[in-house]
Amino acid sequence: MWHGRFTKDTAKTVQDFTQSLDIDWRMYEADIQGSIAHVRMLGKTGILKPEESAKIEAGLLKVLDEIREGKFTPSESLEDVHMNIEARLTEIEPLGAKLHTARSRNDQVATTTRLYLRTRLQALSDDLRGLLSVLVSNAERHIDIIVPGYTHMQQAQPVSMGHYWLSWFEAFYRDSQRLKFALSSLNECPLGAGALAGSTLPIDRFMTSEILGFDRPTRNSLDTVANRDYMTDYHYFASVFMIHVSRLCNDLINWNTQEFGFIVLPDEFCTGSSMMPQKKNPDVLELARGKAGQVIGNMLDLMITLKGLPMTYNRDLQEDKRGLWASLDTVEAVVKIIAELLSKVDVDGELALAGLEKGYSLATDVAEYLVMKGVPFREAHAKVGKLVGWCIAEGLAFSDLTIEQWKEHIPEADPAMMGILSARESVNRRNVYGGTGFAQVRRQIEEAKGRM
Ligand code: ARG
Image 1 (cartoon, protein in one colour):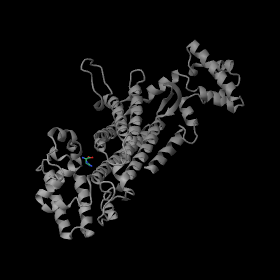
Image 2 (cartoon, protein in one colour):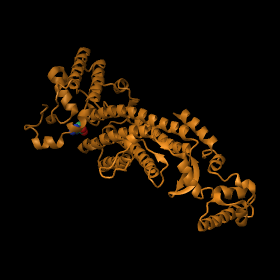
Image 3 (cartoon, helix red, strand yellow):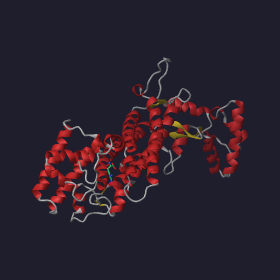
Image 4 (cartoon, helix red, strand yellow):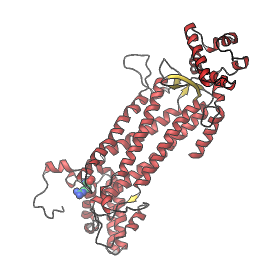
């Protein structure tokens, strides 16, 4: 088919090496959608007769039915999804030979891929909203539970577990904004850019763009067939999202250990060991963390492919989809399973609090109390630090100390100070905008709901 200048068929080895059918066949629906828009435009602009256009459209719909019913098997000898569909169309409807008027596979492949990606990203965007809403309901569910907040993996200050869940809401909310950007950057219509320079025929690029629901036709035909930014934008979203997932999973894996122990994972999201009967392993979390590397790798894969390419289309660009599909599949699966797991996570508040009380996470609270009594912060910091050192040596917690012992080390200490020495008070008093104070967390919850 379409031999033209060639006197010999492409060698079988070359067909095998150059085909992209195994990768691009999944876009058949988007490809037919793009072709229908194109052929309608050809009919409306008088490039084809209206009845020719209608017959080609009917033929395309027939091919779509055949594919859906499993009656049409594409062939790798026809290279890709685009040529397979056009060839089958022309078998059914000889007018199919007019479909490719004013079109190249270079603008076609870009159109098909953008349409396909748009559908997948719209679904992903809904799933991501699902994850955000789980985080908000977890924040409501756990607002009163106090857990240690960590820096350097050392107990730092007590925080509301609601505050913790909302920290991930913020990260994933930014991801949703990046996804939105990826969706808007792909939403321009390549059709009519042709092979690279447009067409001599009186096509209407605005018409095809509108039929396909794009915001506008792309603005420069050379850029159109060279551009894969709409993929790198997705990859960047996906990579940052997976970095966030990976860090979240890492926390939950740690907090689910016997050593921390204050996170309870749902049984149905864990697996046992083939040897050790006591094990309940957080495999889902570990795998989500583990998959982040591939997603970042897929972004680099495409960027490295792109960096050496001259304007405009080069066949290297056919290598753009394998990693894209892999990342789409991974991110979709991860968003869903992590949302479900999070909706079932429980927190053992008593254990978390017990762990906190053994530590000195109220040290900053004491120093700030002294500041309110006029002690310079650096001085207060040093005094409380010294007391912590003494307590460690004596094997005492803050809660073990009498007011006399406090005064011995810190003369400014007073009985009222004893009232602030609880994790709950500590959280409650961090009542600054964005802080962990209960009132602030409640406000954050309302604000998060508004943003969704
Ligand atoms: N199979 C090709 C791809 O996916 C289609 C475009 C081919 N264009 C060309 N000039 N050979 O990129």
